[in-house]
Each structure stands twice: as C-alpha cells, then as structure tokens.
Image 1 (cartoon, rainbow, N blue to C red):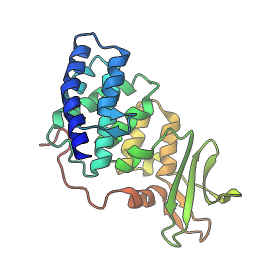
Image 2 (spheres, rainbow, N blue to C red):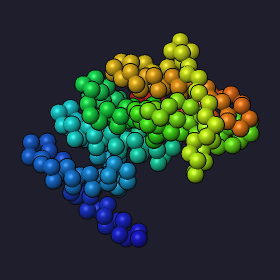
Image 3 (cartoon, one colour):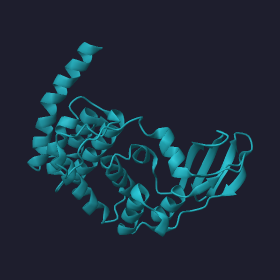
Length: 250
C-alpha cells in the first residue's frame, strides 16, 4: 500500500504543475480540470497527496478562474476537517487570506455554488462542525443529545418546520416542540458572525435559519430547554484546538 501511495504521489507531483501551467496559459479545458480534481481532491471529499501544496497556485489562478476557486475551497474544507487543528495552513496565512477575499467577492455575486463558498469561509474560521453540515435551511436536520436526559433529539429547520422532536423510524418525528429562535440582537460570537455574513450576501433564509440554529429547543422527553448550537458544538468540535495564528495575524 505504501509503495502504491508513493507512486501515486510521484505521479501527481509531476502532472499537477503541468496541468496548472496549461490553465495559466489559457489552454485549460474541462478535461484539464477533471484531471486536477482527480489528482487533488476527488469529488471534493477525498484529498490526494500534494493537494495542500497546490493551494498557492490554485488561489493565484482563482483570481480569474472560477474552477480554481472551487477546487481551492474544496481542498481547504477537507484539509481543515481532516486535520481538526486549524494549523494545517499556518505556514501560508497570506494564501488563506487571499482565498477568503476571493470567496467573499464571489459570494456577493449570488452564485449557484453559494453554500460551498460559505462553508469554506466557515472552515477558514475553524468552524469545522458547521463547515461540514451547514446547508441553506431548505430542509436541514441535526441530531443533538439532550443535556439533561441524554435522549437523541432531532432538530428540524426548513420546509418541514422548525421544531425539536423524537425520531421514530416507523412513525417519523413525534412529539414536536417548536424551536425558540434567538433574536438578531441576542446573537454573539460565531452566531453573530454567521448571521451578519448571511445578511451581507442577501441570503434571508440562511440568516433566519441561523437564528433558529443559535436559538433554543425543548426536549420532547423531559422538557429541558437548551441551546441547539451549544449541544451540537460540544458533540462535534475536536477536543482541543491549538492556538494557531489566523490569517492576518502575526
């Protein structure tokens, strides 16, 4: 297995610069990008050897190549999630900061791939748990444990309603309790930052959904009221996140 991985890494190390040169010269095609995705981040989910090393060139190309921006974002999301420390790009803060600025400008254009870009911004801010699961609240479900009785509570935020419930695989979501959204004035920290971004990008449904995600739910078993985001973060954040400099920090 090790020999095969080493051989693949050597192949990628030779091919990736050639393909990126083609793109830079204006000779990139759809097949060029298909090959780059296969060599660096298959399906946007599985990183390949050398993927993080290709990031500076991808970000430079992303100034004029939308596909480069998409691939760079996918690499950052997966690398951050797999490393679970936030330090994987500590040696290239200027690259990450430029990627952040490029994504911000892209999201202001109301693109079809908006949620992927938004998730990349969350990953850059080390919000690994939200970067992995946040959607546009069209039909979102989260599972959290009640902090009092520890039963698994389903949280729905979307077209099916905004409620907490016990999920029965035969009867569906039962004993529903309406969620209690936070007001915009109550939001702080990460919740406020996410909400302000959604407002900045004109995403009303996303902004409203964040108020429910950062609001409170009632346990259908014991009636304990708890903050949804607190319980989800407690279960899904890594145990400890090193204090690595963020982009723009010295």
